[in-house]
Structure formats: C-alpha cells, structure tokens
Image 1: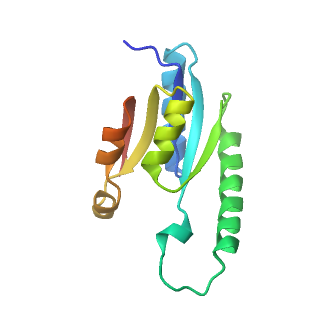
Image 2 (image 1 turned 180 degrees about the vertical axis):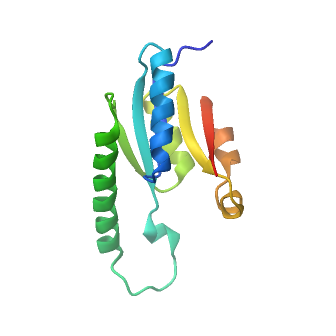
Length: 142
C-alpha cells in the first residue's frame, strides 16, 4: 500500500466540499498524518466570453474573489486539522492541477463529480486523468 505524503482536495465551495475534506482527513490519518492542501479553480470570466459585453469584468472578478476568500474562511473554520496550503487557480482546470501537483509533490488528489446529465456533458474527467500521473479519488455526488 502506498504511503501518501501530500493530499490535494479540489473543492467547489459547496456544502459537498465538506465531505471531500472529511475523506482527506481520514486518509491522512491512515498515512502518518499526510499534509492536506485545498484547491479551488476559479472560472476566468474574461476567457469564458469573447463577444461584446457591457460589464466591467474586473469588478465582477474582484467581487467573486472576495466571495471565494469568505467561503474559504468558512471552510477553514470547519476543518479541525492543519491545512498545509490553500490554492486558488484561474483558467484551465487541468493546467492548474498539473502545476500544483508537480510543484508541491502531491501524491493523491481528491475531488467530487456530480452525477447528473449536465455534468456528464460539461465536466470531462478524461483530460485530467490523462494529464495527472498521480492517484485520484473521485467521489460521486448525487
């Protein structure tokens, strides 16, 4: 059995993130208190829309970043163990995960996957699985 040293939990800041964090804590305890880090990948609105729009994207992103920081603070209040690092990524999810896993020697990533029609179309695990060469725990949400 592999001994994990650093676990990365990909969170979406929904209540389902708590169950992922709980699983990470359980696995960490089984593996000599492996470090646990959290990552949230933020959608970059300026890349998501390329047409004409009459909105100041910087203000939207600033408010969104403020919301993300508040949600992360709430999550940290729930966590009863030390969090090694908290990352907020922007842009392509696979690139963000690849960058963090390589730079910080992550050897297990935990993330959730919603089991509904739209998630199957919008969120593809194939690219992540093919790009990251580490162990993954995919937790289905219903």
